[in-house]
Image 1 (cartoon, helix red, strand yellow):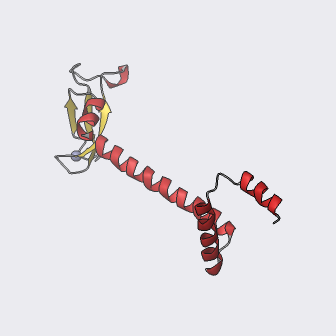
Image 2 (cartoon, helix red, strand yellow; image 1 turned 90 degrees about the vertical axis):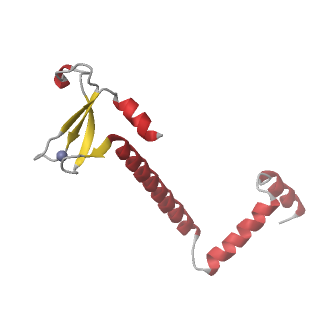
Image 3 (cartoon, protein in one colour; image 1 turned 180 degrees about the horizontal axis):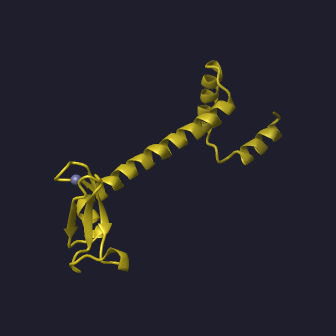
Length: 127
Ligand SMILES: [Zn+2]
């Protein structure tokens, strides 16, 4: 590059510091020495991003599940939390009930009523 081209380069690439330029050269040298291409970088970034999203989603799902299930004291199966008395289809005999734990084991069907809302239970468990 001529001196004129150098100043043009510097102007157009000023957001990349000299240190970054050196890092890129080192990076590209390592990349080519180990037989990888620029295309491999794109593939790696896509793969890694996917992996991180999946892991994050998995952790969030586990955290949410731990907030909304418990083990049945009768049979040790999962019990899931359901809202009650908030619409015509889920009325119980006691209108002060806000939620119920329902055992997922069809041979058990243990039901435990709560005076607390799902939000209150989740908030307690989230602490
Ligand atoms: Zn049960």
